Image (cartoon, rainbow, N blue to C red):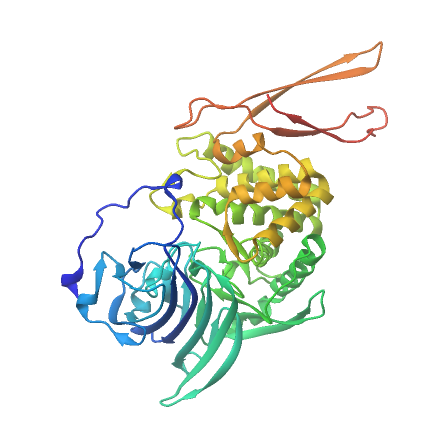
Length: 516
């Protein structure tokens, strides 16, 4: 196999937004079978691939750290001369427009110290695939604009892994010889590879249910170590509150029959929104009055809501490419912020959010690492999970909501979800849905996605005692940032009210749009 490796990149290439091209091959359906073992797991993948458009380019399947054991096309095993490796990428020349490609690979979860892909953690086998971890599990076009329906079968030791979980709904299970068992999960909703997940291990379940607004009963499960079960009640309450709130505020109903959360001690993200199987670091699930503070409880509520809200803003409608990361993260942060505001004190929550902006995002925007909410290039996408993409991105959504008002903003989000359900789209698509649904021109507002830096707004007031008129003069300046020496004026909505100093009352709030 080593002789087939033709090149290995010494340093990561620079990936540029302007270089985006649609995928040449699509994978409408994928079937995966895992023979799970911490030391040596075998993954059999069956990909239904279709050529996108007219071209003669080969199929390229991303891989990283995989040991290929076999490759076949349309049921016929390929000879080594019929496929090759370019670094970690498997390349196969395919003559027709539709084929079934099957691969068998071996991976070592216990040796996976990157904690990306499939890895072992505290007696569990679990996954993390965002942004590019799925290629460490099997060969696949590991990019967010390739959406597939997943059919997954897990096999493992029944003693070591009595619980076998994956995306979607459980459809079959049974016993195997030699003390092993199996379970099959099917997710009917197309999703990108970064949303794939599995968990296998010895876990206990806090089971509950939720009835959706259309009357469907959804089984809820929070899976933890048995000794942690008493510490999961707050997370379950937060989950049910999130589901009800998303129906009430955004009209978004959960779409599967099962929703599972797993708490993992060594999970390297705070939490991950894998479709129907969220995986959390334990600190965002477990709490009890003896050891948890009020901020701990608030964080659990917020993160549980955030990951659940991704079911629509991230899973059902996902990103075309990683430059659009704020499409799902900025929007979902805004959604979890407003959820938390509704659950407790809106004023206190807003103060907390602004403190985060001032402490983290303003510093980032004013320093050498300043970048737009939608970056133009990267070498390592993991470096762009930043306060700018998340928190400033949320403020962009908040400004659009302010400009449109509640009713028109809801029309815009309804249009966004309905227009792009099952698609991988861009920040521009979101703004266009706000324009169309809210009947507003956001041409200048788009600069917020491409210009870095924190604008400074200066307000001057004057009062004419004779007429009682108050005049506000607003001006703005946008500081230079690395790579952007001069800036165009931003569209900045400003909400204000005039108060009576004697009574503390005001005559109503108004919104003006500063554009120069």
